[in-house]
Structure formats: C-alpha cells, structure tokens
Length: 450
Image (tube, rainbow, N blue to C red; front, side, top):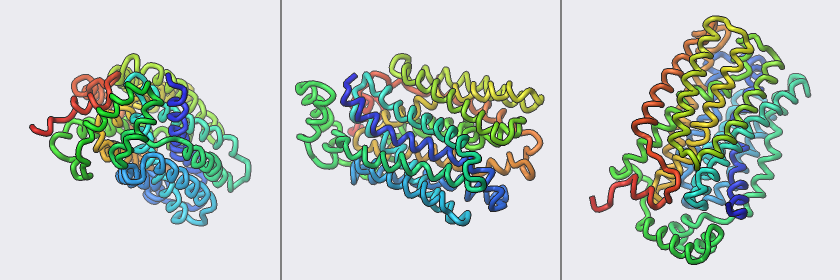
C-alpha cells in the first residue's frame, strides 16, 4: 500500500477517534449528572443523553454542504474546532440546558465527520485498498470508544463530584491537535475537479496513488463522470433510487441492532446485572477491547471477503448474541455470562456493520452527489441513533422505566431486527469490493438518457 496515502488517510480518519470518544464519554457522566440535576427519564433522555445525537443528525444532514463548498479538508479542520468547543463547554456547564447546548455542538462535529471523512478517504484511495483505508475511520471510532471507557475509569474518584467534568473536558486536547494535523493533508482530487476545475491539482494528488500515465487516465474518468454539477435536490432523482435505498437500509439496521443503546448505557446495563459502581466502568473497558480487536479483524477482511460477506457474519453473530443477552436477563443468569454475550454482540458489530457501513455508503453514490448522498445515509443513521438514545431511559430507568424490573424484551426486539437485516444482506445488498467509484456509479445509477 502507498505509504503516503496511508498516512493521509490515517490523519483524516483521526476524526473518528474524536467521534468515538465524544459519543461514548457521556456514559461515564450519565448517572452522576442524573443525580446532580435530578433529571426525569424524559428530560434526561432528551437533554442529557441524546442532545449530542440531535446535533449529529443536523451535522450529518447538512455536512454535504461544507464538504462541497469549502472542501473535504477545510470541513475536517472545522470539525476539530467544534469538538474542542464542545468539550470545554460541556465540562464547565452550570446547568443542564447549557450542558445540552455544548453537547449539541459536539454532535455537529460527529455528524459532519461521518460525512466528510468516508468521502475524503474513498476519493483518495484505489479500488484495491479503499475498504481497508475507509475502515480506518471505524477503527479510530472504536479506539476513541476504548480510550473513553479507560479515561472514564481512571477519572472516577479524581475530583469527587466533578469527576464527570474532567471526563468530558479532556477531549479538548486531542481535538485541538487534530485541527492542526489535518491542515497538512491535500484536497480530494474529485473535489478539485468538480468544484474548483483544478485539473492540475487533481492530477498532482492522483500521482500520489499511481504513476503519471495511470493518473492521467483516472483524471479523464473523473472528468467524464462528473459532467454537469447537480444540486442537492438532484440527489432524489429517480436514477439514484437504488443507492438511496441501500444507504437508508444499512443505516437503519445499524441502529436497530442496539449498538448505541449498549455503548451509551453500558455502565447502567452492567449495574442492572449486578456489576455496580466503578466495577461497571471497568467492565465497560472489556467492551472497548473486544470492539477494538474485532474491528482490526474486520479491516483485514473487508477487501478480502468483501462487504457483503462481513455483513452476513455480523448478522448471524448479532442474532445469537442478542438472543442470549435477553435470555440472561430473563433467567437471571450470572453477570459474568451476561458480559460474555454482550462482548459477543460487540464483536459481531465490529466485524460486520462497524467495519462496513461508512465504507459502503461512501462507495455507492456518484461523484457529483457523493457528499449529499453521504449526508443522506449518515443522516438516517443518526436520526435512529438519536431516537433510540432518547427513549431508552423510558424503558431502562430503574425507577420509572417500562422494563425497570427486567430489560430482556429490549434485546429480543433487537435480535428480531437483525433477522430482518440478514434478509436484506442476502437478497438486496450488492458487493462493492475491488470496483472503482466510477464503475460503481455506472452500476448503481440509471443512464441519464433513460
């Protein structure tokens, strides 16, 4: 693999570290904030736990605009700035409303990064390594999750009642470092052709990937595929029906697996199983370790087995592990056994949906609508993530929750949804490995003259 492209991709993908850290660090602040501000289940779900996700929805739905107008590179810089502001503001917030505002700002960064990073990496890589390089974003997400769990554990007891403030505020350090680092990466060649008509700049970037002769051929392919620039509304033309549907379904099923439910509420779920206090934070780290290991496995396999095969493996793992988690809660099985099956669930996600979703969505849309197509897919993902996170306290709250005595029906519901995902993968999901973005465009969209 080209070392220069690997370095550039890894730098851009570090936004995923901030994404993972930001979205999961709240798990350590969840219960302390509930006690501090005495929040009701509805208020807590809406303003404390899911507010960042509503920012993520907005950031993902509109993230295509700065990606096209400012460019992928400048968008990544401002994403780092948003994370920095959010971390500092959340840490010093004096009331739940100010806290929610700054969490919302961080969510804008998460949403925009889930649009900008996969697009950028897909556009600077080759068909042979696009999956592996694209999955670096997911690796950094789970690495950020892992570090967030460790950070929360280490900071528990650091400053008494203010522990949660340190948990949230420490993110500002890597966020500011990222903003500086991303200024060193070049612009996407496809963005340069489409938005700047800068063929020379695009050609220079393409020569990083291959020799000059191949770069010239690829430049012509890009110019031919771009044609006339299309407005955002053009995304919903009939010829883009297939990629729109595929992006919707993979994002929908990603969240109906219950992955954010488990990651956001891991300490609380483990406490319900008898692993309380700091012990629940420590056991959350095991979830992060499993997530990291199986994401690395997924990265190694995504360009070998392909996206579809990994999704099949993940779906089967989801069904088995979620069913067993539900069974553990229903029968009152040991907390150790429950933790094993939760870790199996995390492994199934990491090797399947986790490794595939961001790569797949960034591949299936044509050059001229890729930014807006990525916004569509990630927007769907985050809408469902926000809804699930918002309503979880209504079901999980130990005092007023619908399933306050035993949450087993929640996991059985997620297991059923993963049966539906398996059908989607088998009968509808195409394979995209080893195919150029321009050839995928021809495959997934109807001819303009049709």
